[in-house]
Image 1 (cartoon, each protein chain N blue to C red):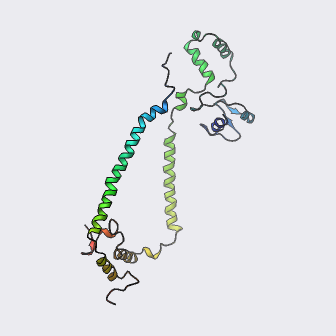
Image 2: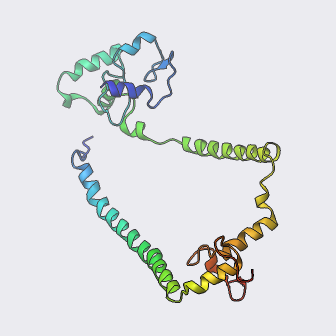
Image 3: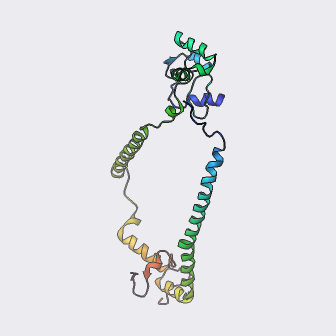
Length: 76
Length: 169
């Protein structure tokens, strides 16, 4: 009936030694994944949109659609 | 120590205010609340009292033998001494139960029942939705959103083809 003496000390340290590197790696991976799946495409989308953006043309289109209160469509 | 005692009251067993089943011994009198209690807790391994308070003659003689050399004790006697001091071993007190299945089942049942209640409410309690939800109104609303160029980069208007006046494929 002589069992081996169980681990009495250093239980938290042992757990941290194992889990902290995993935690840091996962967190870093999540951040990198988010950057390259969300923020980079979004930045590219905005850059591409504004490369060919003609503000005056858009304004006139909106004016003709009649959504403004300060200017009327050119017909009137 | 006070905290452990207080926590033990809301611990493993549900305890009413007037009746207390302590350590499986039976119903305790109200006065016993003031006395040190036995409890099986993982984070407080040595309770204030032994589990068995009233030793039988056999147990008393065993306790006497314990005062001598422990090498003389057989394994059964050692286990008997352990069981005098403690109700459940750590393995026994830590074992899980199947209670979670009942809990999850109950949760699903009541969520389903709530769904029925909500359906009934929608039919018999709430009035009609505002006129802004009607088809014509919604069409005009969405057309106005496109005219205003709402969400032109990645949002709503980004999916509309303004040249061909249709949704982009």
